[in-house]
Image (cartoon, rainbow, N blue to C red; front, side, top):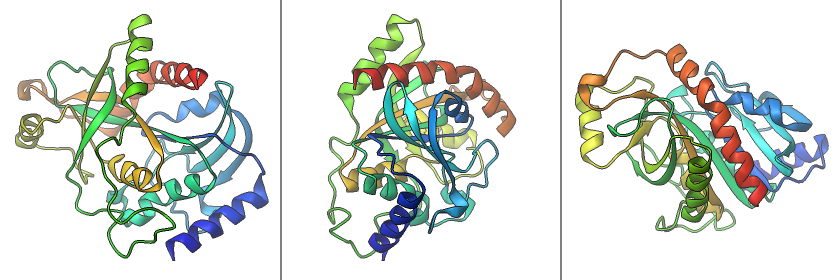
Amino acid sequence: MLFDQTQESLAYLRTQTDFQPEYGIILGTGLGNLTQHIEIEAEIEYKDIPHFPVSTVESHQGKLIFGTFAGRRIVAMAGRFHYYEGYTMQQVTFPVRVMKALNIKQLFISNASGSTNAGIAAGDIVFVRDHINLQPANPLRGENDERLGPRFPDMLRTYDIELNKKALDIASMHNIRAHEGVYVGLQGPNLETPAEYEYLHRIGGDIVGMSTVPEVLVARHSGLSVFVISVVSNQCYPIESIVETTLADVIEVVEKAEPNMRFILEELLKIG
């Protein structure tokens, strides 16, 4: 069924554009401004694509964009889906299945996160090298379709560490504060309590968020190479540094840091 739904979405997209992307990009909270720098070939509303959910979170545009960015052919999700919106994990990750069906060769994922590492401040950028999955469901749960991927995908080399190294070099050369770290995925939508931030720090988490991990699992299941870049929106450790945070606060910090994220993505894509 999932395979058939993916093919139906693909068939519809092919009626709208024959553009062939090489790379996929998922744009997280507050990071939608990157779309202004894409030479757009086609924009397709999520609501028009068969089996696609619809974004309900402020700052998520709800469009699939085909075009050229940094000289590369890309398809970008201007807005993602979250488990806390009420969708199943299969719905949350369905666009990754569709991007794989479009024959992209690599997936770039962005997000906004909170820092549980005292050395990582709001406005910093983190390249994810690993994750800890504390979300309550798994998008791979249920009967497996071998046409989509193996029953038991191995997570050993999930993240493109070589690309992380290149990204760190780019950031260093241009005086951009950047780190490599472990992302902890939680359900949301509430932010965490001080005790939970302490726990996440102790188990080895550097940053925490409410997305990304399900998409990474499906990308890995699909055989896609993955690079994840996170913009830190708020400091959550040490505990005494925590202040109340709103979505508006998150968006404000992330939008200020977005040009740095965009620059790094541009440079990585130029490298190819």
